[in-house]
Amino acid sequence: MQGEFRKRLSEYEGSLIIGVAGDSGSGKSTFTKSISNLLGEDLVSYFSLDDYHTEDRETRKKTGHLPLDPKINNLKLAGEHLREIRKGKAVIKPIYNHKTGKFDPPEVFEPKKIVIVEGLHALYDELRRFMDLKIFVDPKREVKWKWKINRDVKERGYREEDVWKEIRRREPFYKRYIDFQKIYADIVIKIDLSNLGEDMYRVESIMKTLDFQLSGINMNFSLSSLINSSEKPMALQYRDDFYYMKRVSRIAFDGLLPREAIEELERKIMEYTGFEENYIIEKKEYVNATDISQLLVAWYFVELMTNIFREISSA
Image (cartoon, rainbow, N blue to C red; front, side, top):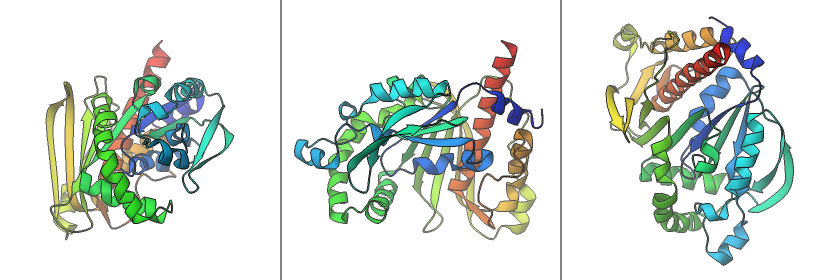
């Protein structure tokens, strides 16, 4: 079936939807970047649920509300839009401007073959039923706070003291309104500080076991590359488990790995999909835990989509 994936994707009527939930600043877009790299920007579009806030920044200061509260997000409208997007139809969606804290004029959203939906409430009932792949990003608080401060201050123009104030306010809301969504996810990505060095992370991918015939893409790591060329500390752990009543595979990685150790897996995924002119993770001498997790997400995505295409062709 080499290259057949590409053909079936181009012929697919409508759009396939990937939902990514998690707290603000948790790195949601990072872990689907591999899919965009693999397929190319002409086939992948991003859809932000932040645009469905019902209060702008100034209004929230008056009401005391936080975006984590689903009541100040128009999830009903977002669900109606995803229903149309799944059919491949354009929608006119609201636009929230994070830099100004205000709403810009609505824009037409033209979905591509793959639509990645990111947001605080992406796996809520109103939206989850339209998704083909569901991901929850779950960093430890220390990691999440570090990322949020860096993003909100440098990219969105907030004052650092205001970001810290919001972090303290929002933690109870996160536990109440966001954290539980992980029980619905096909993949939960847990991120912790590294045990092996600074400026690194330990990332664990908890993947729901697939209950259909796999494509034959083997998740091989080159042991010879590990032994012969690795000059960096690394730790790799795998185990089968149950997670919220689902059978899962847990793959955790910490440290740095020679890129050549994973090149065979990357090559097989690209070859299988027919997108051999692209790449999955950045070309560099060593890959980190985030890169490994991105590669696993790409593999899981290909397996899931292959099964969808298989079911359509046999219907």
